[in-house]
Image (cartoon, rainbow, N blue to C red):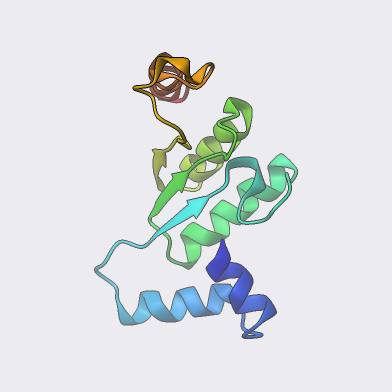
Length: 127
């Protein structure tokens, strides 16, 4: 996301042309990106068709692996990113955002069981 943003705002370059140029020079190395689920590489949610088109263009321009996450682990946002990256033809890695100490039972909601349940949902619901 930051690479895309920097290319456009500060370098005044087309991020797609930059990616395509790199792909041309490095054809045999898999390229990966972080995709913020429904936020794509931005800082707000985008309509589903925008996320799908973005992933399609990213894959066409050279991205092979999409590591998809949502900063709040909101499964609907994760699912959109997983579906969009997968339908674009990319290899999808679902990821969860983690914070805290799961070994401390006083930490409330975000304990080890929370993350085990989330991982189970990522595997079984988005498989």
